Length: 387
Image (tube, rainbow, N blue to C red):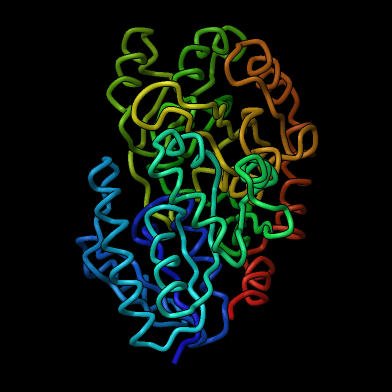
């Protein structure tokens, strides 16, 4: 029987950085040492496909996955009940809670009632986005106080929680990683991907991310007319879907950029590395969300920068959030002001004007990914705190 239970709202086939984080870390843990409690996604075949790739048992339950306030409150109580039931039934010795509020309460209940310690994972911006509600803030503070270990995904996130009152001694940073056996340099493209390069002179600028405000797609679209003056054959390829899709497509139409900006929509996992490889430069000018219910949200790390580097590509990221852990400024790419125009344009011009610089940064990024960010290496840090 497993000694450890991970409770997470984000797990494949749900697509997110957190989902990838847990799937990849748990995939390399010792066989049958853990169990996972995750949501049913509505596609049982996909659920089963992912679950069978792991060396541990995955329990699927009808856990809410919505992001509205009512759904978040509901999933907090559903996870607390399910977490308690599974921990008691399986004889679990330690819980790993994937989210501070929606699964952190499960850890708190199991500690108080069953005497089971718990580990908490945090990703950045939670204290800003949810800490404004006094009741939620109190729950967050209590969860942090009672957690045995808190795992931030970057130095920036760690600092956020130090300011929230968490002792530095309680934290153990485990950054996200990359699988370099999946993401690696190649020039073998199927026709529907290769066709994005309409001529040998075409340069590809790529973003892979949910179409959310903080990812900065709109900034690049707004700068495309200026970039096209310098690089007439430039094509900006946007991989992903999200709430901003219609607004972004309207921007493209208003700026008459239909030939220079291409939306791929959802891309299957097996094809994703090919889009990175087709690109000349990867860009994600991440910033703090200013609008909507996600106000105050920021990039806690940025796995996509590592994926691009692992494919031998230089990257441009916003100088914001935890991206400084993912991008080594001046070596694997550039960190830029995501609000202004000047630094983004300068970084793009430097890279597109110099194939030598692109190759140098891409090569260093690939070497760094292999050296410091392989999931197998990072998973060893989880083993140290499993039970």
